[in-house]
Amino acid sequence: MAALEFAPHPRPSPHTAPIRPRLPTESPAPRARLAVISTYDELCGIAAYTRALERQLSRDFDVTVFDLSQYLLRSTHPRTRQFADRHIGEICAALRGYDAVNVQLEFGILGRRPRDIYRRLLWIIEAAPRLSVTFHTVLRAERFDLPSFARNALRLNFAEAAALFSRHRRDRLLSAGVAERLRRAGRRKPVTVIVHTRRDALQMEYVHGLRPVFDHPLAFLSEAEARAVRKAASRARFSLLDAVPATAKLIGVFGFLGRYKSFETAVKALHHLPPDYHLLIFGGVHPNEIVPRQAIDPVVLGLFEAGYIDATVPERIAAQGRAAGPFLSVAVDGATRELLFGHPKDLSRRIHFLGATSDDDFLCGMAICDVAVFPYREVGQSASGPIAQALELGCRVIASRTHTFLQFGRYHPNRIEYFDVGNHLELASRIRARPQFAAGPHPLAFTAETNRAVYRAANLGGGAEAPPQSRHSPRPSG
Image (cartoon, rainbow, N blue to C red; front, side, top):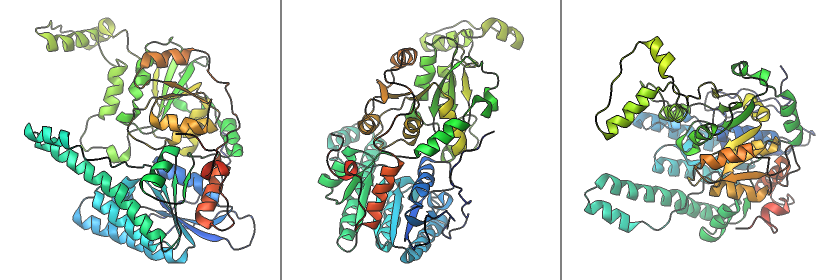
């Protein structure tokens, strides 16, 4: 089995001490020391991006990744929260020996409670000698929805009223509150913001008054790395696909299972495709969503229901009957049940769960698919790693028309086919139709190299220049 030709990564330490990867250098000349604060040894999108970023920046910096302990930081137990604060304190103490610090900021990786997240982030802001913050989510604290709050309170729906108030306070603290602290820090030392969409850049510049702000989409793979993935990719790499006919057309969805990713839309589309189309699900339940004593994850159950997996005709009739009134009950043994009542819409033979995979297998899984589908709902995300990787690999990409994907498409025009959120019939039609754009790898304007240039400019300053399309006109509009 071919191996991907990526730069080696030593396994990070499980302790709080900083990780010092031994990466190849281009010259013996001393380089700036860059500390990257992020998750690293985790099955999550931020960690995957950090590992890619480490490869990109190793030619310019002596990179150290400070791995944020999710066990400590996401705990709400009072004693564990104290250890989590100490964990951040130890990282802050070590930052004095670095020339620049970059924070890969997804708020949830610093804690569950907004005040914990805010406090820990402020410590890092204060400790960094030079700071760049990469916002993977940009919260928008709009005006408090007083009419909805009053309406719920008058109806004695106090739980919903309290939730509205709590969400507003959280979003305001982690948007305007964090921006204010960054502005203050910027008066004493260089502070730079990196975002993933033009819309987020405008928010940071004009709403929060932050300068400078760089916008660049997520970028993972160099051209050489993408070629290595395509060379290593084959169906034989995945034993779970051994029973799939070689002539089958493969549709892929990617990432941890979550309701907002709406993978059930792809399952529903499969009902309207010929039987030689198969759906591959590269992803599993996120470790943070594993619930003790839960028989099956609700998202997995929703996929089963959308695909009529293990369903029978009498069960579906009974379910409808219970909603409408009396219904007929039929008792048969298991063998007869399977023989007589197997549901004709059961897609169990055409849906394949590949589980949570390594970075290498995840990328190879994309490369073997005939089409990569991203059927997400709109949840205010700023970026998606898998869709960026799919474009870098030259996949045919079909995505739901969310603000996230529309913004991403501005950096990569004429590469993404869109369908309306939740419209599985439109999705099925697009999958069957000839590709809207030419298939195969194409030169991209925003690449791992332009991403590297952004981080050089953000963390070195002086003579380091960002690519024009990331900092100045022309940039993607809107």
